[in-house]
Length: 151
Image (cartoon, rainbow, N blue to C red):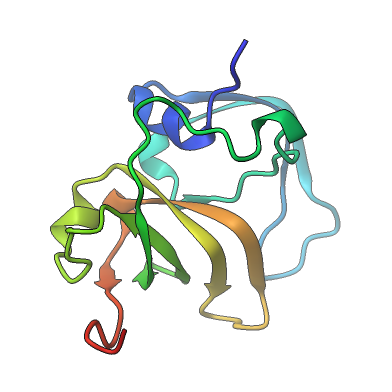
């Protein structure tokens, strides 16, 4: 059985996600302890971004490519959400122009690799991850690479 990538699960349907063993900790203000629930249903449209916590792929899968694999080029971009800035590599086909914002906004949930999310009200609150999956519908600004010609 092949594992489903989180980005494929998010883009597969508009159905809410059913999660178990939920813990919520406020980013601002004081909380005596995190809020916990055994189960929650989350509307995908309400998600700003997700940081998957995945185990490393099995050694046998490293280097293997699916039959429909298309070589892509990483572009360092930033996106602004209501309280966050997420920066990471947006992977595009070699002929695609990363300055074309519609490539991002029309994409549903978009994985950024080698990524960092900064909580703007308190920039010391930062998460770094191999992948952060951003909900393009929640993005307020897309900032392509500063110098496309400086390659």
